[in-house]
Image (tube, rainbow, N blue to C red; front, side, top):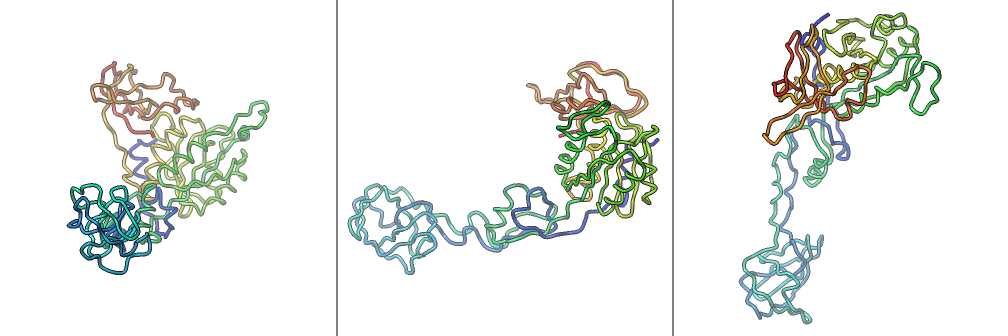
Amino acid sequence: MISVDEAIAIILDGAQMLDVETVSLGDVSGRVLAEDIAARISQPPFAASAMDGYAVRFSDMAPGAELSVVGEAPAGAPFDGTIAEGEAVRILTGGAVPSGADHVIMQEDVTRQGERITINMPQEKPRHIRQAGIDFQEGEVLANKTTRLHNFHGSIFAAANVPSVSVTRRPRVAIFSNGDELVEPGATLGPGEIVNSNHFALSAMVISWGGAPDYLGCAADSEEAIADFFTRARDADIIIPIGGASVGDYDFVKSAFHRAGGETLFEKIAVRPGKPTWFGKLGYARIVGLPGNPASALVTAALFVQPLVRRLAATQSDARHFSKAILAQAIAANGGRETYLRASAEQGADGAIHVTPAPNQDSSLLTPFASANVLIRRTANTPAVAIGGDVEIVRLR
């Protein structure tokens, strides 16, 4: 049985960022850039009107002055000429400001009769022109390599006339459950049957880390059936079998894994929950076998699958980030395994983070995850901690 740190080191050993692929702008959210993105044009590419009104020379803006309207400049159809003294061009929002103009007077501030306008309101300073390049300049780097893109990047790149981008390929994560007792949600349960639920949360977690989950289904409790699932999944970057990882009479996952040609690198971790978590390789794919109990599966996924997905996808850091928090409820001394308690953390009026562990940490329970946003880390053989004591926490979601 190895330590948590040893397990993570083995899982990450030799894992490298995946290859690069090109995606359209509608698919960039959540992806990681494989190149710097520089603007191909300035935005806006020309001086544009911010108002409906008239493009004029500010020096002509005396109240009562009359100007001749010599043309118009709607969006997409610039005025072909230069505004001279005493002239104005009708302009609409987004229209290119004609040469010679340095101000747009709003249409509410003039009276128009035929082809002449009269200035009704004093104009304090030149206004209502968006100068070329005020958002970004041609050649300006808008996002650096390794940036994890979000919802707004697609529009930013589009405005910069960039039609597609190169990103790190998302790790393909094949997931399958195991157990004759499992049925899918909505089924009528027979004697001894339970609803198969772990893979929904696990798939969502994988997506949030930058991976692409593929749930293959539930394997029956036979070595042949489980080996077939491994064979089907072997083109994935990561394979996650859920359940069948212990030493019961019907726990065939590891023997099926060897039957499929896999190599086991470790079989147990000194961690609670999740001691039966194991790791191996099948061709190119890395296999992280998770226990079937919900808390065991999801906590160990956060501890051991998350850094692997992040390493392959190049999403932020793949290291665990621990921080200090103040305990709002006493906890008992810890035993010989590193333990992770589901807990809720929030910032108090004092600015510190206060954390409350879920009252029941049984590994079969899912409901503590509804409110838990952190895990409290308890290293092996640590003493009890009273209310107000310091603990280490790691973010769960």
